[in-house]
Image (cartoon, rainbow over all chains, first blue to last red; front, side, top):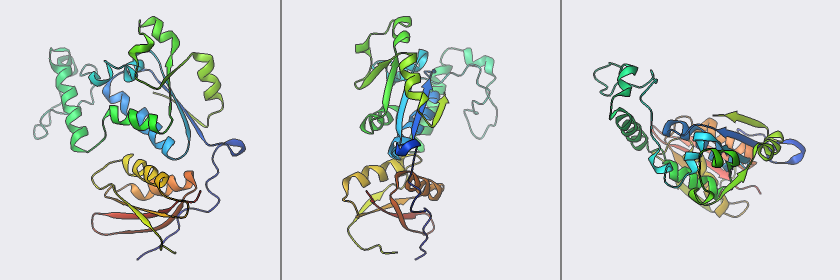
Length: 179
Length: 79
């Protein structure tokens, strides 16, 4: 059996001053395809011992909204990367046709079928893992007011933060991403 | 490398990133310090991912092997 030590023994030092590394994400979009990248990054970082905070703002708040989260969709409009619905017929859907009734639902179904075929976990499962790993899920206070969302509309475990509080968290972070 | 000791096995075959490392993390928390977790995966990017995970968590990357479709990694809980 081939044996190989890939990791130097002193390699576990993370962030500054012996603190764990910290990841700060801002999530502003509420579509199914835009929900995956931040949750995959957040859960992975947390599983590596990083401290992680996600700031859900504007449409991103839908990802932690009890009723809207299970209904996250993919928009067929303005997405030239939308692949052909039938693989054998390599014809992309003209973006204009994305506006037709039923196209959003079809695009969403298509993405859900890829996710299921690839055995990728669902968004609710990723949120469960995130909470299990103590990822901070910050709901933007102002968005609650602007979008008329009640605190009780959000999933369990969500914390509430304004821009200064999140920036305080992000200011001490090693990686910051806006998604 | 010494791979003796109690081994907790994680079958992550069929799961794509990030699940193999997430499952490894879940398993590591269940074993005692010094014990081993063995992960099976068919994720072709798993070597880099497992190494990066160990580098960041400080757990020891003890061993690896593979056959045609399955990669096997052994990680020791270090702390």
